[in-house]
Length: 224
Image (cartoon, one colour):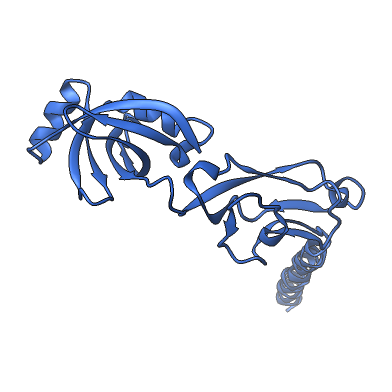
């Protein structure tokens, strides 16, 4: 989804760990801009601004403008990023130039809504199997998310990727039969629990028998 947001950046000539430390010390971070006829371009960007985009509702599917000092101003998307595992702060980001007239491939979240009848009435369990699907569409038509209502699902029923209504230029790339969510029965666990319960008493007679034999042996020894 395209947002009317512009983030400034600066091109950089040097690379390596020392350059990355210098950038971070000044409140910036390294990144690389890919795609288009211009080819890869190393840039320095503000990590706080990109963190806000990644944490927004549209996340990495957000299309925004990147304005490079003394250079181009182009629509881009975040295609890869790296976090500090301790500080949980952005360390590096890869950006891609976006041609707004060409279709692109993205993954969009799927959100389920409602309480299935198979859970409320039949006592089943609602399982989320897939949380996103892959689609192809024009950049300006990337959905924020897909909403799926599961209220009518009974035990044994499922919502699949092919059931999700698509609009505009959106084309489904994920398998149509991919399960988004389904309702399953909990009764399948009962036989296993019964077998486990039956197995516990079965071990006790052996111990009791053994004890009796030892006691009998002991009595026999006393009699002798």
